[in-house]
Length: 139
Length: 367
Image (cartoon, rainbow over all chains, first blue to last red; front, side):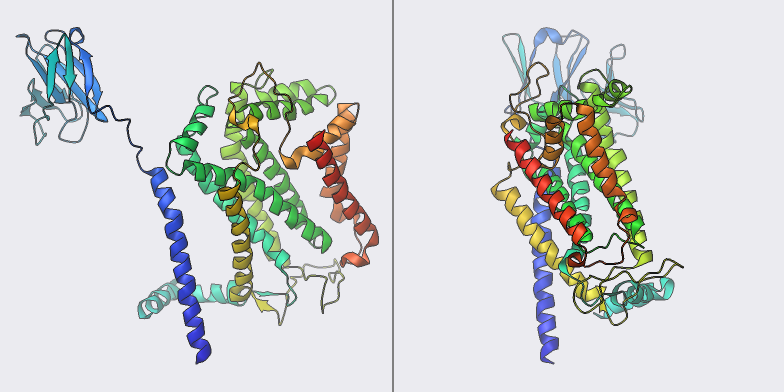
């Protein structure tokens, strides 16, 4: 009976040590595998104005994702997330139609990011930006 | 407990798991006088597993490109969370694997376990030993440091002393006239695919031979110390009345592993650069040979032999002869006696060989 208790006690101790070892191994491995922190640029991207022609679009990396700046014929600027809200593909700018097409499942968005047709459930997210001294600062 | 029992019953009904456990674990009997040296194989298996896991983790960030390799290793060491731990475990682990492999081979030599009917175990183990040396050598180049680059230059260059085909072989090995990006590609492929697969296959064969022939009885203690096998028919060496593998010897394996881990982690945490030199931290520069480039500690004796002999080919031949002798030892040493003290010629040669190896290594280190 005493032996049984001792065996059980040692078993529990061994289990505890094994669990602690598993945690000690899992913690560094998880951190090693977790996505690395992107270099912080205060979340802002600076683009010279001349890089966004009238009626054209400029795609760029923004906050670890893809964004787009569009200049309408009227000269107005719009900054949008370029990630389709359906399944995450990157939308393409159709210069002739002045709208966005997602090539994956034919989702159409207006130049302002509103859904025109197709499966996207939500409009493209609008991004804040300012224009000063010929430079566009997004974010 | 009820759930575990029910689950075990469920599996047992289908594949007879309890029968396997009874046969392979609790009913797998080992010699009563089995000792701690028999657990070296288990430690090696564990180290190999750890090398595979840390190697896979390193592959996530390592870039096998001559322009990027050193930078990627620096990135792993400095920027990836716990990257230093993974890399150091891999680098220290490779050295430890060679060290434990030496212990394993020496114990087999001194206990005469390589003798008939275990020639195949010895041969498969000997090939494994060479493959481990090969995987260590190819892995050494991957960080693309000054040490990697020049140690590989020297190591691959020694092949050129083989008459007629030497120069061709060196270029074939390197993929170019000198060590360069082509060498990195070749060594990377060998290190992460060909050699690990070959090692895994040989480990399988090694264990298969062990399983078929049975564990040898240590030549110490109450048993008589001679080979019992007559060489007439296949006979499994069983150990009636011996101790079960599980839980008894599994506990010894676990204890040995804990002791190993203590040493391994002590190096990783307190002296991680034990096996590194200053050149390990400088990116490879093909135009600047460092002053005193030395191979890893386990190649120092080979390195010194090549330096001693005026002709490189003779130096290489001497090493080849020594290795061939070791490989075919079970076919040369065919006596029945297994106790080391009953084999005086073996003892003189073994102790002399070990002292010579240590002496050459120290000489190589300081030369």
